[in-house]
Image (cartoon, rainbow, N blue to C red; front, top):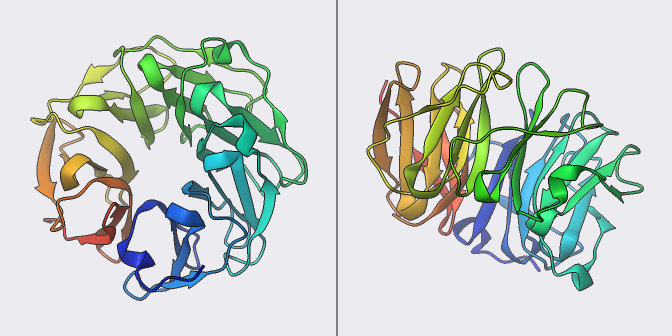
Length: 286
């Protein structure tokens, strides 16, 4: 259902496809923009909340969410088709990542982990020991060296160096939930989660994590790396962390709405974030 207030309602993820900005959220909402200011909602075949969206190229994209729903577009987000819907599972997908237009992964609550090798025409469960404890998999990220990184509940960290064929659990610097990760340098990563806990490594395979002094106990739910190398994290109560000096220092900001933020991207010299109050624009100090 097309709703005029959707750009100011609950949105959970946002991406730049290279051609458009696309955000997804509550009640199956998908909105599209060319400039980040004017947004148009498009029809989707679901009312399930959409939690994440990813485009491996400007045309092909996938959105996932509650009721194990998976949506696909082949025309840059103008039209969407249903690829998966399993409300009887009572498990939401929480993130999605495609390596190209054929190979992709969707992860979620209670160890939910699906893969496709044919562009989503068929989906199957990933058989891996990292699912045994049924922790929530909150995010899946591709690092700059091609390593895939899953971050989740109870300090869950797992990596794959062969495109997702095999997975290995990694030692964790924190025993509570991570909500996401961003790439750092050639082999590194930044991971973030509950109570302002942020950790950084220059080599995901080295096991050496360093805690960032954030000066905040606000949980961080989403993050992005800007073109100038700075990392921006967004989270509870509209709190925003902007890294300075390679994460040796963090600048704390807050959105005008002061409501939870779930994801962010850099665009047009500013940060565009989404969350409980819809689309938010955050100007950064230079």
